Image (cartoon, rainbow, N blue to C red):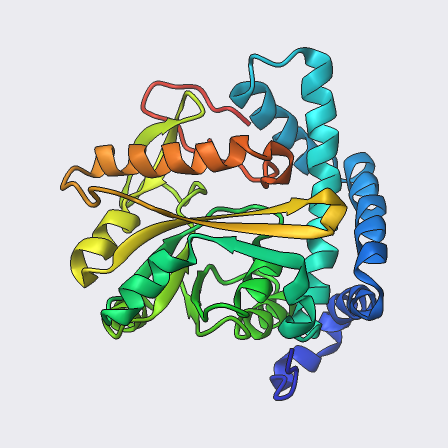
Length: 302
């Protein structure tokens, strides 16, 4: 990560606590990867005990999405999920400061040929991802095979947003959510853009589509962007395996998309995301309010 050119306003004393926390966390990047995993587990275990609001959201999501699990199994999954948040945090920060080529031995990619085929024809690729704890670390690993731009939402914490933008610039071109014209231009120019439609961004430009058996507000951006740009839509999943000794990235085709029906398209994307989550449910960020907005007449969940 290149942290040169820090805006002067971020050096104001009100930001010092953020710099201190991120500075301390950044020291983990100098540790062996196996140690980072262990420290991440400790951090996640502490988060389970101390960050009660996020734990409550996680408990609610897992109770609703995995009704087939017993109470004890749900509690175990909640704990494993919170632990994984800690691992993902330290992985992310360490990945931003390390040379991707030094990490290449950790990763294998399945389905890279789908991207290469479209790129060889000069066609842009909309890479539909989701919020796994491996999100940013997998992005660093993926640069060994392909560059990708990242569509992201600006963080309310200015220092953290600076860190996120600098870190993600290692993958390709960071594109802020509001920079729609830039997104369209990059795809039309044949670039790969990562895009995650798996969170509740409100009901504007969204439809309610099933996700783990519940109605979830789902943005229609995936099909809209594909229609406007003609980009090929592919799905990406990424998993941590064998206690962080290996990472697997999967690229999958999304066939017959877009269909012209926003609800059908949102349903298809949600189903593919759900399928990916079920392969490693503890690695998904259940700490976000995925079901925040409800259809008319339904009670609030959180």
